[in-house]
Image (cartoon, rainbow, N blue to C red; front, side, top):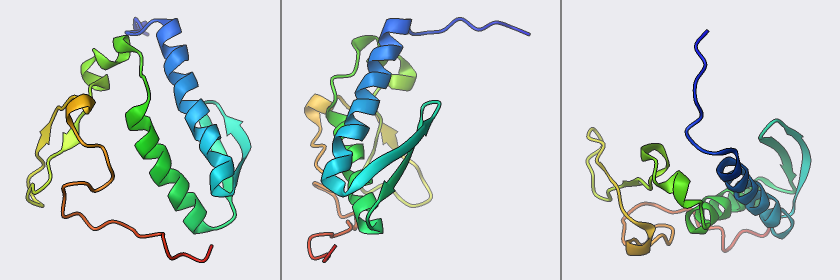
Length: 123
């Protein structure tokens, strides 16, 4: 058995996990959801409707883009921001790294991607 040295410090990992978990929990009440249980670093959540769950997931993903992640994490290749390039062909995956400071992270902004519209949902 080979022991593997952790890349990030325990403090950095604790900070990243806390940011992730805080955002997940912060968004629950506003999306008619609640935390039923946790299993390790996974959440078990329930929502009033499927639309509430989808809205939470959308807002959670957007929120992750705007968190003040630890610099040590962002310096790793695995932690660097990676964005899909709008207009890439279906059979070719084109990825480029961008700084979030220079990229509009608004969902669907500047793309022709189909976006779900929850604005008229009665739930």
